[in-house]
Amino acid sequence: MSDATPTASDSDASAAMRAKVETTIEVIRPALQADGGDIVLHNVSADTGVVEVELTGACVGCPASTQTLKAGIERIMRDRVDGVTEVIDIAAEAAAKAIGA
Image 1 (cartoon, rainbow, N blue to C red):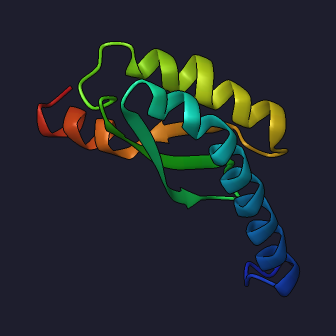
Image 2: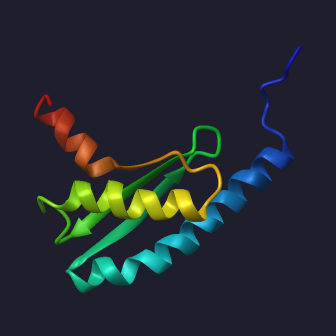
Protein backbone atom coordinates (compact mmCIF):
# COMPACT_ATOMS: atom_id res chain seq x y z
CA MET A 1 0.00 0.00 0.00
CA SER A 2 1.47 3.37 -0.99
CA ASP A 3 0.80 6.72 0.58
CA ALA A 4 0.42 9.60 -1.90
CA THR A 5 1.00 12.23 0.77
CA PRO A 6 4.02 14.40 -0.12
CA THR A 7 6.98 13.94 2.20
CA ALA A 8 9.73 16.32 3.20
CA SER A 9 12.09 14.54 0.79
CA ASP A 10 9.58 15.09 -2.06
CA SER A 11 9.52 18.77 -1.17
CA ASP A 12 13.32 18.89 -1.01
CA ALA A 13 13.62 17.19 -4.41
CA SER A 14 11.12 19.61 -5.91
CA ALA A 15 12.94 22.61 -4.44
CA ALA A 16 16.29 21.30 -5.69
CA MET A 17 14.92 20.78 -9.19
CA ARG A 18 13.38 24.26 -9.23
CA ALA A 19 16.71 25.76 -8.13
CA LYS A 20 18.53 24.00 -10.99
CA VAL A 21 15.89 25.20 -13.47
CA GLU A 22 16.24 28.78 -12.18
CA THR A 23 20.03 28.59 -12.53
CA THR A 24 19.69 27.26 -16.08
CA ILE A 25 17.26 30.06 -16.99
CA GLU A 26 19.85 32.60 -15.84
CA VAL A 27 22.30 31.03 -18.31
CA ILE A 28 19.76 31.13 -21.16
CA ARG A 29 18.28 34.57 -20.42
CA PRO A 30 21.04 36.77 -21.97
CA ALA A 31 20.57 35.14 -25.38
CA LEU A 32 16.83 35.83 -25.27
CA GLN A 33 17.35 39.38 -24.02
CA ALA A 34 19.84 40.06 -26.83
CA ASP A 35 16.94 39.63 -29.25
CA GLY A 36 14.48 41.68 -27.16
CA GLY A 37 12.80 38.77 -25.40
CA ASP A 38 12.85 37.19 -21.96
CA ILE A 39 11.64 34.16 -20.04
CA VAL A 40 9.60 33.92 -16.84
CA LEU A 41 9.48 30.71 -14.82
CA HIS A 42 5.98 29.82 -13.59
CA ASN A 43 6.12 26.24 -12.37
CA VAL A 44 8.33 23.17 -12.11
CA SER A 45 6.71 19.79 -11.56
CA ALA A 46 9.21 17.32 -10.16
CA ASP A 47 6.57 14.58 -10.57
CA THR A 48 6.08 15.01 -14.33
CA GLY A 49 9.27 16.83 -15.25
CA VAL A 50 7.28 19.59 -16.94
CA VAL A 51 8.63 23.14 -16.68
CA GLU A 52 6.11 25.90 -17.34
CA VAL A 53 7.54 29.17 -18.60
CA GLU A 54 6.30 32.28 -20.35
CA LEU A 55 8.25 33.83 -23.19
CA THR A 56 7.86 37.62 -23.12
CA GLY A 57 8.91 40.71 -25.06
CA ALA A 58 9.92 40.13 -28.66
CA CYS A 59 9.37 36.38 -28.19
CA VAL A 60 5.59 36.94 -28.09
CA GLY A 61 4.29 36.35 -31.58
CA CYS A 62 7.74 35.61 -33.02
CA PRO A 63 7.50 32.84 -35.61
CA ALA A 64 10.73 31.31 -34.26
CA SER A 65 9.59 31.21 -30.62
CA THR A 66 8.42 27.57 -30.78
CA GLN A 67 11.77 26.56 -32.26
CA THR A 68 13.57 28.60 -29.58
CA LEU A 69 11.50 26.91 -26.88
CA LYS A 70 11.85 23.30 -28.06
CA ALA A 71 15.24 23.17 -29.81
CA GLY A 72 16.90 25.68 -27.51
CA ILE A 73 15.43 26.09 -24.06
CA GLU A 74 13.98 22.59 -23.66
CA ARG A 75 17.13 20.89 -24.99
CA ILE A 76 19.35 22.86 -22.62
CA MET A 77 17.02 22.18 -19.67
CA ARG A 78 16.96 18.44 -20.38
CA ASP A 79 20.77 18.39 -20.66
CA ARG A 80 21.39 20.35 -17.44
CA VAL A 81 18.53 19.38 -15.12
CA ASP A 82 17.85 15.73 -14.30
CA GLY A 83 14.16 14.92 -14.53
CA VAL A 84 13.06 17.64 -16.96
CA THR A 85 10.93 16.03 -19.66
CA GLU A 86 9.32 19.03 -21.34
CA VAL A 87 9.27 22.83 -21.32
CA ILE A 88 6.02 24.52 -22.24
CA ASP A 89 5.14 28.17 -22.85
CA ILE A 90 1.93 28.65 -20.89
CA ALA A 91 1.09 31.89 -22.72
CA ALA A 92 1.32 30.20 -26.13
CA GLU A 93 -0.78 27.28 -24.92
CA ALA A 94 -3.44 29.64 -23.54
CA ALA A 95 -3.51 31.55 -26.85
CA ALA A 96 -3.85 28.30 -28.82
CA LYS A 97 -6.78 27.22 -26.62
CA ALA A 98 -8.42 30.63 -27.03
CA ILE A 99 -8.42 30.33 -30.83
CA GLY A 100 -9.41 26.68 -30.74
CA ALA A 101 -6.14 25.23 -32.04
